[in-house]
Image 1 (cartoon, one colour):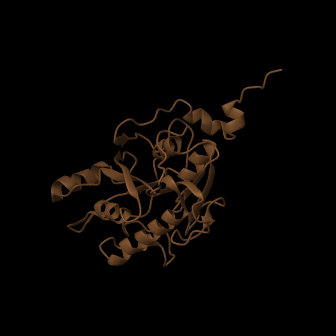
Image 2 (cartoon, one colour):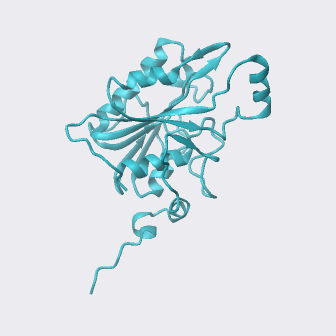
Image 3 (cartoon, rainbow, N blue to C red):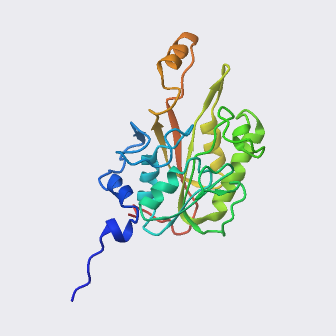
Length: 255
């Protein structure tokens, strides 16, 4: 008798509802990723009400391109758990950490000190605060309590980058989502500063512009203020895709 073929709906994807939402999803082909909603279809990944929530199709693209079934995906600043939900729905092992966990499957932990062995992670994703514009936590260690114009902010991001580098396997990928800030007449190029910092530890794979449609500032009131007072609302975020250097770089799509 022959060996029965694997059914990806049951054998590889225990979250069948999640697989139904993802199975017909196409990978992005350009460096402009424009998502009309936080989650595709009727299945929700993470919580769309969470301030600054990550677009789940963004994580889907990273997981599908740079990991295989069973690989370990880690989100060290998990927020509402979008990356955790996506990775599990795609049949990957997943861990999520946050200083202020909002779910029991997110472990309370500081991203600057991960409880993980060296070179144990197949894909890191991180979507950190880009200033103190949103209060994510009352914990004094929260990076989101630091203004991006202070040296301590970028120093904290670099401490996170060092931990992600330590725990990432050689040749594997980190996706880092970040935005610039304009506040009180001052523009801070957080994205450029972060990319320069990441270059100390990783080699670049590509830079993606992520358009935002579910952001709270995208409403007529803020658009009116931007036009009247001569400033620009943040229309996109940077997704920096970088790789931990290796003598044998892993190329191509993994799925």
